[in-house]
Image (cartoon, rainbow, N blue to C red; front, side, top):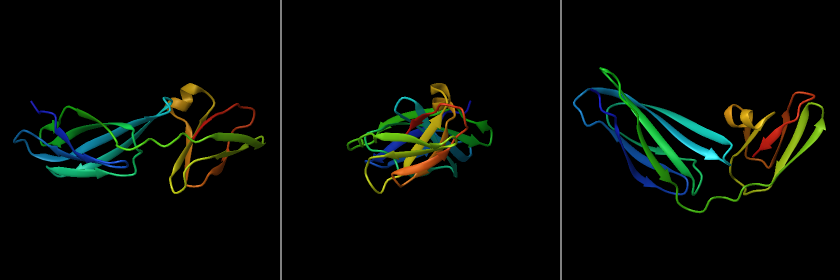
Length: 163
């Protein structure tokens, strides 16, 4: 039986998490697959996937948000097959940024100008969909470091926006 890998949080800060991966077995490991999950505004779950080569690994994941819960899951790729999943949870330090205040204004039947307030020098994600279910599962999205963006939409539809 292949055991799950051990994920150990080495350190964390306002915008990063460092963790180590190792196996407690003599089975040869060729690498790991790691998923980092987090949720924004209870509507949209985000995921970042890392494919890591080698047996032992210390990884640093940057560009995270302060005071945000993250779930890290990992499995090992071994000579006998894939291992079961391991999970750890960590909350980054610091104070979570204030949610931006979003305004959306139709320019014409297929374009919407979105603008918001918030800190400078950060990346914003803009998510939009025609229903809450679509907004959660598979929204249209774009990123920008500006405080406004024009998005193209389908005519004769109502949209929900989240930044």
